[in-house]
Length: 295
Figure 1 (cartoon, rainbow, N blue to C red):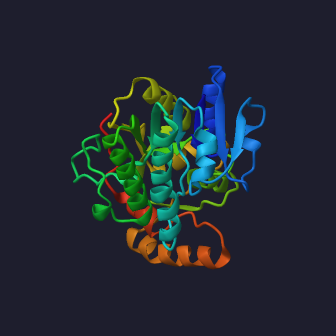
Figure 2 (figure 1 turned 90 degrees about the vertical axis):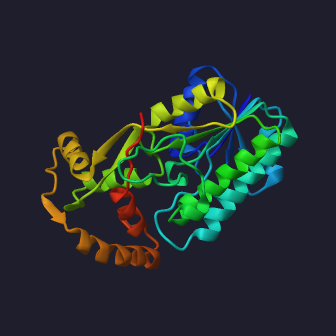
């Protein structure tokens, strides 16, 4: 039996599909309020619960040979530090403790490249970069680093666990949708009329799912692996979307100083309107940061 937290998410449902395609028995921990549409047509067991609830985790993990812990809150805006810590850090600690109590053979934890200390320019991101929340700039990365440290503490106490740090995930079955999925939808609707400089490393969600399965079978306990694809500039990404949609790529470039001035206002408007902005100070920083990965 395989148990998966975050099974209805973008990566989660792709992992479920890959495992179900292999004929594996899969049990999915799903929030009560979450839609089950991403799991429609898949022969899986569903357990409702939250990673903040140890009893729910015990119900999901009991009898499981492998646990994939994918559930997390992803945020590119400020003001969510408490929720991020509760789910990504303390929730992961709950997963570790429950795995130990239930005798789970192996835990595969989905961390993030943002949980790694950013390397200096000229050095690629690799598995030797430390997880140090005090040296990470934004709340999301800090929370994922704390979650990773909880997993490593579990390893020191006898838990067999492998850590995976994906870069920017894109691809099919993006039901929510994800931050990048929202950008793609906005582009298809003709709502993206300008671009900013920068780029990021993107990886196909299906490759990340297969990487999780490989880690469950061949990964070294206590080791962290970076799952990356290829660095793509914002301009090149929009040109690719233009080729797919037939909608011309925007030619107007927003200067860096103007983007820096607009981003906080965009984030503030998003909070007031209860919508998610397409770019924020956090996302601008990531687009300009060193996202080169050592493939």
